[in-house]
Image (cartoon, rainbow, N blue to C red; front, side, top):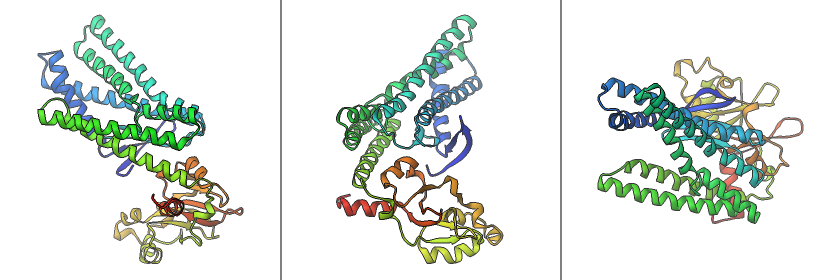
Length: 373
């Protein structure tokens, strides 16, 4: 997801935070500090409410991470590639490859809501115990609030609408019943579009009448509708690519650049020569060493561009999407979760670069087979 930075790893999975994530914490913390806590435990100072609200928001955000981690760990155990987990303004998102079977997709999808239900139950139990046994009113309210929010999160995510977990579950059931993944994706996507539209209408109604969190519902509904539409389109593209080999889509000869060049030399010659935003790099022996994004090089201060080598800012080969020319393109896309990758490098039997496949190459082949895309 663009605009995010790395925070390390969670259970060995790359963890990223989007610039909008602090907005989520602020929104949750403010609602708890100004609404729930004063109504439930009156008479405390503003500092107590603000501190408890912040801790509650952080606690709920951590539980969102556990929800996403459950998806990621289940996927990894099932052999599905896991790219990363990102926290952002509407919660969390885990980038995964596609499941090879409906049962696998079902297990990955249901893992998140089950985790949220378990965490919610523990939070509610801890809240009652804290309030009745220890008589700590403020912590008890925070725990009950976080536990209840997790239960609501689980219930909401089980709505049968892509890209929610319930949409994934619906998709796996339709896929299992009919044996057609593309049809299942379309059905779940249409449900996602309908659910998104209903949430936007409900949010608009609440905004007009001044009740509830109308703007938040409109944002969530818009996200659902847009994401569902994107998933339906992705399903159509994958269906159009059935049987296509990497060799049929790759650019030959591929645009390349030496990885030992300075950033200054690279920017002076390569973009004008290739017109590509992402370039494959070759080492001294002419073997691929990774890929580099032009926009990343532009972030290097002008005074340092002559001393910084392009390879220092490149995505190394072991982190790139790799394929053989004879591989089925759909298999490569599903295996590498390439939606978030910069470029597919097609390597021959000797490990040398035979060609590259960009998102534009993929769409060109798909439209050639299905012109309406």
